[in-house]
Structures are given as C-alpha cells and as structure tokens.
Length: 239
Image (tube, rainbow, N blue to C red):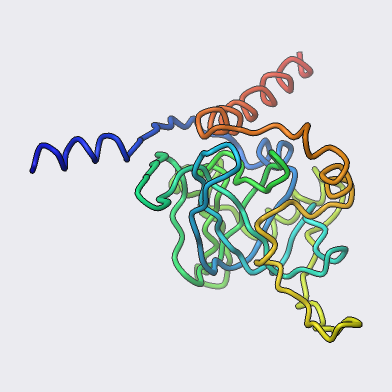
C-alpha cells in the first residue's frame, strides 16, 4: 500500500526548478507590460485549454500602469502563475511567489496567451512595507540586495514615470450600474483572468481558432528568458 501511494505521488506531482539572477528594478520596469500596486485577495488553481495547470491570484488594485483599469471599469485584476493543484494533479514551480491575505504588493506583469502573468515569477514581485516614516519595496527573491530591493516608494513611482512616460494611475472602485436587464456590474475577478484590452477582445472573437497555447514548461521558459533577452539587447545598444 505504501509503495502504491508513493508511485501515485510521483505520477500526480511535478516539480520545476527555477534559478534566478539579480535583475534591477529598472530593467524589469522596461520589460513589463503592466505594473500592479495593490492588495492580495485570493487564489484558485485552474486547468488551461492546453491542459497545463496555473494559479490565478486576485489582487485589489490601488494603483496601476498599463492595465487599462479605467477603460474596463475594474478595481481587481487576476494575475496567473504557472503550477498549482487542480483535482488530483500538482505542479510545483520553484520561484513562484507566495502571498498572505491582505498584504500589499507591487507586481510586474507580462501579457502571454491573452492573460496577465507575473513577470519573472518571484523576482518580479515586491512586498510593500512601512519602515518608520518610509514605505519600502522589498524584492521577494533578493530582499537584502540594496541594488534591486529596499527601494523607496517615491523612487519606484519616479522610475515608472521616467521609463514608461506616465505615472502610476490611482484606481477607484468603479460605480455599480444597472443595465437594461437590471443586472448589476460583475466584479473584475469574475472575468477568468483574461487580459482586458479592446484589441485583444476583438482578436479573440476573430481568431479563436488561431490562438496558441503554452505548456507550463514553455511558459516558465518564456517568462525566465524574456528578461535575459531584453538585458542583452540593452547591453548591445550601449556599446
């Protein structure tokens, strides 16, 4: 019986390792499609269309860049991370950040497969803490590296303005309205984590059969290598 249980664990549990190298906040800002500044609310593991498992993490938006919250009337956002437990299958990805209910975080996102994904996994995640009279961003992977961690909030917002050309946008709770059928507005967290962009919605309707899917392995590879490629091109431009 013990042997059978061990074999079942080997079958249903997959572990992917992740190795991180320090990446500056400046490089991650340049690479990111979006920036989320808010509170962690909840999570749920799901199986994607290609059969891979991902975990949807829901965040209450306080400020954002690139997420178009005002256009789509949302004050919550779903960010995907590879891996999780769905029914009897578990996929563990080392380096995926852990969150505590209600904690304040800053996260860089990347749009992949018409969904928001956490850029660089834990490396692209910062815990926001109050330290004396200051608010600091602490990197989840390298908390003690002062070159990419322990960054003041005002410096973080300054870098967003300089590198992205606009400031973080303050997010207000959208008003609840009633349509012609007397149906209240649905919360953003019920939208299955889809990327909210007009272009992507139109493309989804017109090209459903042409959408590509990403396995967990390739997704982790894309998220890990995108930063390395961006930094490589930047170094070449500086030469």
